[in-house]
Amino acid sequence: MPEPNLNGAYYGPSIPPPTKTYHRSRGGSSCNPCSCLFNCLCTCICQIIFTLLIALGVIALVLWLVLRPNKVKFYVTDATLTQFDLSTANNTLYYDLALNMTIRNPNKRVGIYYDSIEARAMYQGQRFASQNLEPFYQGHKNTSNLHPVFKGQSLVLLGDREKSNYNNEKNSGVYDIEMKLYMRIRLKIGWIKTHKIKPKIECDFKVPLEANGRSANFEETRCHLDW
Image: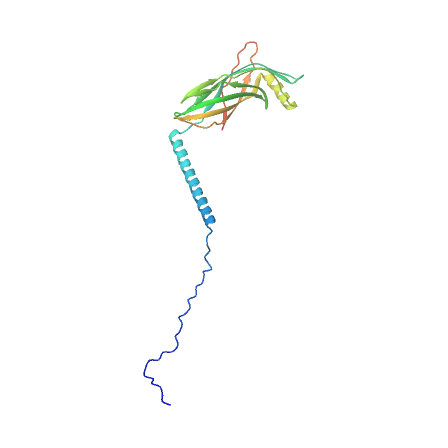
């Protein structure tokens, strides 16, 4: 049997191309559209709030540097006490007290609206009288006057210690009295008016009792301002 001619090209069966295999990366994760949108909105809102806070802080700092606000000063300049009698039979206090006060606004660019003023007279922690004063506006670098007057009678419940203090003060003719001012005010800076502020002013002073028309010396007292 003759041998085949091996000088020609030999074509065997076709070899298939290698199969490409795709592997999904285990480290990646698909993003839910709703979740991504929510996260984006939260980030944007936080950035806006943070920016607004910084802007407000800068504005407040600039206003403070420009205005340099100073505390308003309250004084009891004079006090007249013509009656201060405590009846132990019915725990009733009979009183007649007149005060002169000054309010000094030292600021050059800040005006003050006093929308409401309530004056309360206190003795050893017990309120025995109150009066509503007229509202008013106080301009820049201005001094205003108040004249609260307390006259009448009131039930005052004092303990043994407080009654003993009253007797000592009665013998000395000088009484420790406290007055509190409860206010609602607004500040005016140029054309800007702030919201209402509620400061509380406390005045502790010693007032001598006038007897038989004899005038008594009163020492001017500065009040404490609590914002």
